[in-house]
Length: 94
Ligand code: SF4
Image (cartoon, rainbow, N blue to C red; front, side):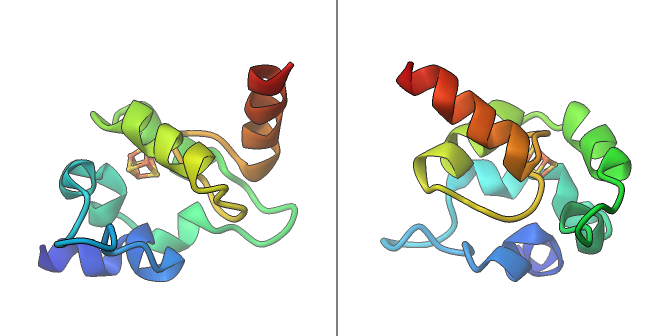
């Protein structure tokens, strides 16, 4: 659990699920063991390192689904940037 507080969850404010604690998949989030800043690059900054971590993450699908369901606007989630997630959302609606 302590590791989660230094991962992207800390910065995005999604430490809990609103009920009784952390979402189960977040406990396996590989980004919690890395530099969280890589997941929130400055505008125009590289997303390569974050996407490299996501590609190896066991909970990538759950993470992406969570981001889509919760309309997360910032950062890399499930290996996709904000713009890429918008594209997925549009394709799901169409
Ligand atoms: S897919 Fe990426 S952002 Fe999502 S939990 Fe895994 S490493 Fe973190």
